[in-house]
Amino acid sequence: MPESRPLTFLCITTYVKGQEFMRECKRHGCRVLLLTAEKLRDADWPRDSLDNTFYLPADIPLADIVPAVSHLARTQKIDRIVALDEYDMETAATLREHLRVPGMGLTTMRYFRDKLAMRMKALDGNVRVPDFVPAFNHGDIRYYLEHVPGPWVLKPRQEASAIGITKIHAGEELWPLLEQLGDKQSSFLLEQFVPGDVYHVDSVVSENEVVFANVSKYGKAPMNVAQGGGVFTTFTVARGSEEDSGLRQINRDLIAALGLVRGVAHTEFIRANADGHFYFLECAARVGGAYINEMIEAATGLNLWREWARIEVAGEDGTYKLPAVREDYAGVILSLARQENPDTSGYKDPEVSLRIKKHHHAGLILRSRDPGRVPALLESYAQRFAEEFMAVEPPRDKPTA
Image 1: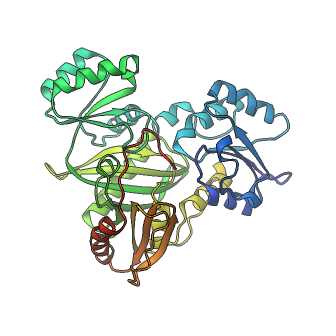
Image 2: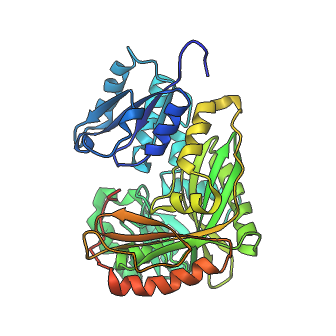
């Protein structure tokens, strides 16, 4: 860090998240500026850690954000620009390039936002992906439908998680959907649906090297939970197991191929029932949602938001050092609840390490030293959650947090 003045961070997020990132930056003596949505003016921000907060009106175009932040830069020397949410990555990358601030530029950013770009880059790195075709040329799409067995999924290229995904069972179902999309169809890709178990690897990356990775397995595929409702669970896989070591290696190869220099990553893979191979689904340069950070902290003691901030403070000088971590096991169970403030006090097992407090949500974080204990508890808890709490709402076209 320069001796003459503290580093100034501009943190951008249009969702309420990243509080611990901002607190950690302030602990390191940095100045922290927050750029967020006007509708979040009264949200739970770490105000003691913020030097100033700026609010964006709803639906402001990126072309107007650039001159606004450039005007701010006349009096504020901005050293780091960080998007705390996936949907703000393009804004942050555009501002970095315009103001020549170090960090991920627009080309690399697309490998973490555009599902087509990340698949093509993964293939360059010899990482398996499900067979896919971009929704560009109709002749190519017809050939794909004739030669790649269904079902398939039509995916928006720049949405997060399972948002906007449509499952297609027959070729004749696709063409009306493309017709409805009109000029927007090029922002989609068609991919073979691969039945199997879905995993995620959450990483800390410093100077092109994955210095920490935690491998977890979803109880029910996120797409099924998002579109059909249900109880969300995920848990740490047995350390040193074949799936743990295999996914760690694939994740290292993938992160190298995508070009993440420093930061954090949340990457999803599916293990196909048909052949047992792992296939890459998507990678985001952010902290995973659905309390995955809290789960990882319960298992390892490592808070991904905090480490991400420490990496950004260290910057390109390479002084970041990963702290010592535990190797316990943890899991999350989370459900939309019928009750405004559901009571989870009936879950009394000693493995319960955190009770999630969020309106109309029931959730727990579990922790154990036994790799089999957490998934066994989650399985039994999921049945009880479905009976006691679970509510279902229509799939959303945008995330809520």
